[in-house]
Image (tube, rainbow, N blue to C red; front, top):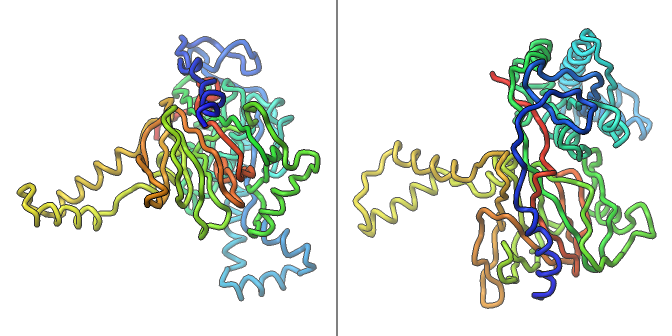
Length: 420
């Protein structure tokens, strides 16, 4: 087992220098030799790709139209399911109007715009554009970012339905309806570049299928998901064996999750954190997040509720370990301080791992359930598991598959910060 750790995890020790901080320089967006700058002249792209989400209305319409349903029949079916046809159509129209506003604002500035639905978004579109704008919510932003490997190509999110979407990764909500103002701030350099660190994955071992299953558009049953992995779309890639680590062509902006596809089944794997000893674990899965993702799934896995804090403090008080006067302010202070400790900057080149619901007995242990790390290695002992990147790209990860999870500054995603 130690040889695997040396082979797989030792490779990244020479890349710990992180993202070099260089002085801002002027930029023409398509010049690869330079980097974006908010110096004199700001940032003014010539060509922008706008990636739009598929609304629930569009999804239902496409889904049932294939089944031969008319629009009236769809309306009736949605009513039986407790969904409002008119409500879905209203949200769709709000999204569409806001997309039109963004596109019109860009074209009014003489910018060449290419609008693509998320299912048509590909590497050629990324190469064509000076910048990518995601028009949707956080899910659309994650998809838009997933195909951008050039750290000097900005990706900017616009929340097209602020009332129904958090849009944590998007511009402040007010720019949804005043996008020209955001553009002019870019032109004048009234913003800050934010370099969101991302996770890279080196995969090796046996029984590996390098062809991912795209979860962004598909509503897959467990059976369909497993079948998609087993076929992979390319028979020659099924059940491959990689003798050396191979870098996967995806980067995680939020998190990587490893676990059995059937959530009620325990995930069995071996894990090494920061080149430490290998440890056999059974749990509900493993989550490794970035600073960007520390406010998302990872936060909800690990956060404490005020009720839990109050119960713990009552135990402390009952045993007279410390003299406490319990009140709402103290409970809220302790809760917030602990929960805030789980969040870190998107620009920090470190990760946070979380073992979900670890099983501890004489065979399996979990010496560290969570913590900051620079590298995690996992060997799968699972039956029907997957490794999911940002909730949208799924790789088969069964018995014999090994992954090294790490960071490199060259993978940083270029985004912008505008004031509220």
